Amino acid sequence: AKHRLFDAEAPELLFWHDAAGWCPHCMVAWTVLEEMRIPYVMDTTPLRSYLKPGERKPRAFMSIAPRGMVPLVQFFRKDSSSRNTWFFEDPVPDVGRGEQVCQMLAEKFPTSSL
Image (cartoon, rainbow, N blue to C red):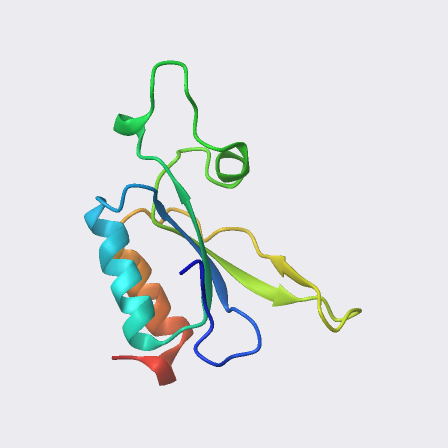
């Protein structure tokens, strides 16, 4: 599922992971998101080793993650001037390991902790 809201009205974050589902760091972070039931939307990008010659990662991803590393988390913030508009915050910097994402989620959502 690209959207996992767990009965919430809106997601808390955008979760970027590898398109093939092979990255162990992404799988750890994804499992914790599910177990903590944090509402999220997800997008994917291929791992470098899966890119064909001349192919590049999506521009939308590279514009926020110049190093091209996953997993990546962007928290949503609600626009106070509009009831239904959500914006991405800047991505959490220097996160590229599953345990870093898990630690950050536990700190940001302490009542949802495992």
